[in-house]
Structures are given as C-alpha cells and as structure tokens.
Amino acid sequence: MAIELDDDATAKRQVNLGPLATMLSFALRRAQAVVGEDFQRSFAVEEIRPMLFSIMLVLKHNPGLRQSLASAALGIKRTNFVPLFDELQERGLAERRQVAGDRRAAALFLTEAGLTLLSRLEHVSAHSEAHFTARLGAEGRAQLLGLLHRLGDTAFDVDTSEAQAG
Image (cartoon, rainbow, N blue to C red):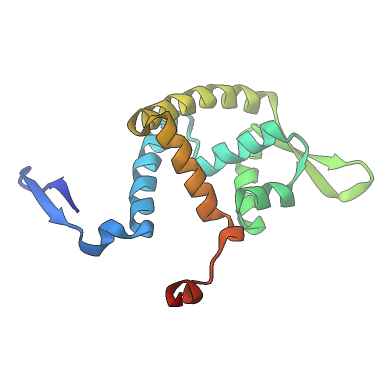
C-alpha cells in the first residue's frame, strides 16, 4: 500500500508504507490522528479536549458517579482524572458533592452551565460522527465499532504462542 502526499515543492509523491500498511497499531494511530484533528477543529471554540468531553458525557448519563468509577469507566488513571475534573470544576462545568454518610467520598455532577455546554457539544459531535459515518457507511461504522470494542476487551485475549503453534 502506498499513500499520496504533498512534498515540499507541492508535488504529489507516492510513499510505500511497506509492512506498516498491514499493522493494526499503525492503522489505528493514523485513523485516530484524522478523527482527533477533526475533533480539535470542531471543539476548539469551546476549548474542550476529547477527554473532557468524555467525562462530561459520562457524568450526564451517570449523575452522582464517584470519581473512582468514572476514571475506571474511561480508562484513565485516577491520578490523571483528578486534574481533568478539577479543570471542569474551575470552569464551572462540574462539581463535587459530599456523599451522605461518607465524608471521604464525593459524587460528581455537571452544573447547569456544564449541561448547557454539553448540549451544544453533542450537536457538534453528531455532525462529526455523521461525517465519518458517511465515509464508512452505517454498516461499516457498526462493524468498526464492534471490532474496536473487541480489541479493547481483554476477555478476548488469546495466547499468541499457542495460536501460532497450532
């Protein structure tokens, strides 16, 4: 497989990717870069990064969630989650509330401002999703999501030494 790129002189040039073209890690990184650039461009005006958007969505659908569960659900180390949530809180988009009967625990919520912003962001996100769905088709999108979920689920792990020997 080769990709066509503009070189410094604005001429088109084919670059042979060799074995990279068949490597999942490379294909995933390239796809993530394209989707990430679209996200950054779409959400730049609100200064929202993908992980902040993800946290807001999880809290919208799970108001009162504890920090440990929110970070685990998003695959974020708890120590990395705290400054992300602090940023949302400093911007007035989310808040911690004490849990009755447990002084050490805090429940996480979006504020009214956070819900209002998230509503706008969900429309932007829907437009972006539609853009990429148009490239894949609805069936291709569903298939890709299923495969990506399977890649991320360790329950599907296979001992590759046995698989290669068999």
